[in-house]
Length: 245
Length: 310
Image (cartoon, each protein chain N blue to C red):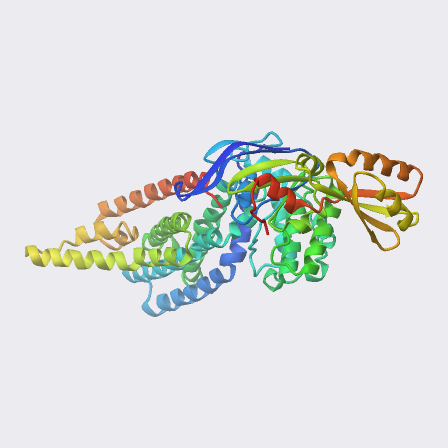
């Protein structure tokens, strides 16, 4: 018998999308697309403005995506996962379906939300590095955070705890880092280092170095997010094998 | 069909012991009752059978497959009705079943057939969240029956149902067993209602299977009284009189004009069975079936104590 069924993954991802994301994604994509279009039209298509707007939208999108994927924790805690896993779908396929519905579908809708207004208003800009670069970084950050949300869901099995964790990860952690660095700088009487700050925040927001001029940090953040995502993906499968419902 | 051998299962890093060396067998084609009080290990055992939980030690085989390593194979041949099923409330009944059909590789036409079979036609296009407990249980049966499983695991199928719904569900299970020819295991802590349908029993108490086997064999072993129901073509009073003259018959209750309930000492029951066969050949008895209405008595004797089940 097959060890891994792609058709099962697709079928389950379809259901997850319908149950946990369908309306929410539409509710997310539509206003963000409009917000993006309005901001771009009002401020013009200057490189820094485009990068800033796309980073803002990406952050909002990442948080919402993380919160949506906490639905896995809900399925595990309420026993809804049992309704699927008593059928011929393996634990790995079930988790793979969440990975497809999460990073996959949300990633696609994220690209749509970011690029749609630009394609409509000024299609030639899509090929400018200051337009596609934030999309690439944003997409990688989205995959990274959604995988963290899925892993947290498997471990914590509590939707509100996972949501709190994701919000803390995205918003609270960078603020705490800034405060701690400021205190250290004041105590030691040294100039705060922007490079150190970005290096630390990069762990939580791999997209942030893109806004800076540190080209080595840009590469490092990409490498870090891709490696961490690959490890998280592999760990999710290992954890799935030991999943009990 | 199912074999448990010295199976241990604990939760929370060994702090809670659910199964303590459980061993039993369930042969193919029986309708087995998995009987024991709440918290005795019934649900854990059923979940282990389909690989939803991982055992600490021991061996489990379901039609030769190890549920932990071959979960897809086991789940393909098994229909499972969980004790407290939770379904996505916003999804329509038929769409949810279509999804399950997709996972099981079953054609959509089968979904319509199953919906009719369990009596869900009126609610097929309604969201699951709007179903009553009784209809949720029917939905549970519907998803368990898709693809006509060889093995049907029903975890407390009548729990939280009103008496009428309980009876309906039990009758439905009895009909399904006959129609599908599947091996069925029903876990329950309510013994009297199960005696209506089961012919095999596994008694579990505090994580230990204390005994298992065919009901008539268990009744003989523990000297329990066996109750038979007879459908008659002749006069119930005269047949009852004749039956009472037998040494093994301890009591007869006349139920209407065509039915007798006969209480028989299981140890000397052969005499009764031979007599009934003669009556059947002569056409006075149309049919008879065993109804060991002493499951609770059997359970008490098996666990060797005064622990009541319900």
